[in-house]
Length: 404
Image (tube, rainbow, N blue to C red; front, side):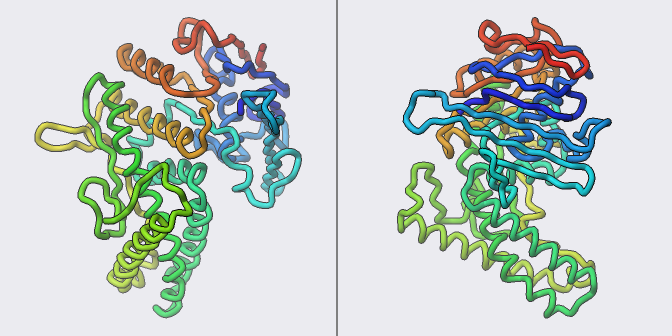
């Protein structure tokens, strides 16, 4: 599928218009503060129903409006193929009442999750450096988005975990008896163990690719990605995956052996989680908050050194941290290709402005070499369009008005 039409209504400073996007994508050219990033934000909103810049829904409504609406028409790459048809995904938010509405092919979704992931989009943005420079919550959020869009059942387990965690924390904060708090434990353990298992598997599967992408962009330097779960359990020494976990992208989900291995790994993590909650019981009752579980996980990103690995957050230069963030986005695109069998829509928000020339050239070569779909990028001027420069049509933007 490709993005063939985008409809904008009262989204930030963008004027109300409907745009027909070329099959190859587009380069949007304009000065700073004209709305280039807003344009990519509108597209990506239809992938995740949230801003990649961390804005709240009400902050994206135009100043003089009460509602924004964005809609995308998706068309099959092979229009003549049997059963192919356009598909529309739309999202609207009303400030009054804080109401969000999502429709797929004109039908309102009963759950927000039904509106996720239809564009298969990956956004590369300067703010991605926070994935490396920021705290564990930034990296957990990255994991949760990638897995929610690509791993069947993950979002449901994560939502269950968060809901139970909320109730358990409320019981702790209210000073309820230990028995009332413990009543939430088994549901917390069951959903949390699955969240941990899916995170561990994804990182194990893509750790080597992260290192390879980093090395290619940095011209040979090494970097490592490892999972650091808050709950300690028996695991392989290199990747933090439960002993016996089978990581096989081609595995048949109905395969009985795989199912048995899944159950065994889940049981291993659940038992470790149960023991950790028991150990933390008195401390949790005293502090009034749940202290163990995947809501305290981290992903460690490190530079590979001769004597010891160094944490990129603490010791990486600006260029090294940006390179690591780019590697994370590249394995996100790889995940879409593997799990969905689709070429991802690549959104580039003036991403090379803060990279040195060598890193920029190598990341451009990588993206060109990868199996990607449309590319939609923003740049201050024509000379800054360095990817598919002879292919991408140029659009202009000024004060939110796009000239196609």
